[in-house]
Length: 283
Image (cartoon, rainbow, N blue to C red; front, top):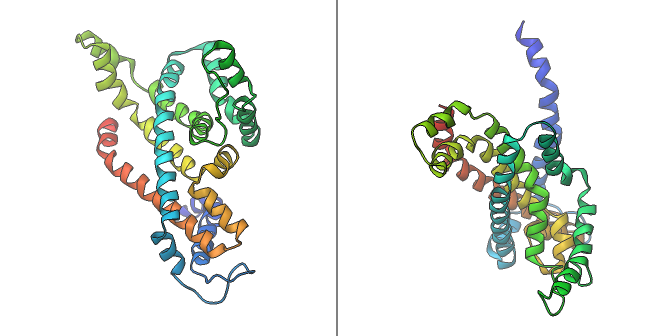
């Protein structure tokens, strides 16, 4: 009888996951096997031709590979940018710590559309970035930065950096100072202390940050659509174009399922590859 109240406490969470996660995925998978029909959301019957089309046509395979590689690059860039920031945050105290937290969290306080329009204004041909480079004599004519892969990657790093900084900062704060003092007392250099002590002990914060940023970067749509336009073709943009442009919901659902499956496989492989390190750190 005592287990019933505990089960009742978990019931809202179970219902939330069921309604907003399990059922939408189940409906999307079901939709991906429905037959297509011009002018309608879907036709009669079920078929696996959509998956055959996705896995054999170069357009979709290239977009999927490009999305995964783009997400891997953005994740790596976020880690490189975030680790020094997280290190300084973990050592900061008082007002300095609050200021750093505010600076890191500031991108999350602005809507994604506003951020993207801000980037469009800054990097426009007549924008302040090009004007500054022209004034300094760095370039002879304005550069076309809008609708490029580089700008999309830069904007996504700007958006996702807080998701990497905060868990790494939490892991760095949890490192026992006595461990670092012991390493220094043994005459170990600072670089060796960082590489053999600090970096492994901070991995419990790095792993969730890496996974979260990779998944978010893989599924990002608004930023690539606005800043990349037709020049940057990624899987999320193809999914939306298929759903809204051609109104082929079964094919769009198949594309979405393939993208989610590919991202899940990468996450599982990464988790398995880093399992021993996580167990060693926790021990």
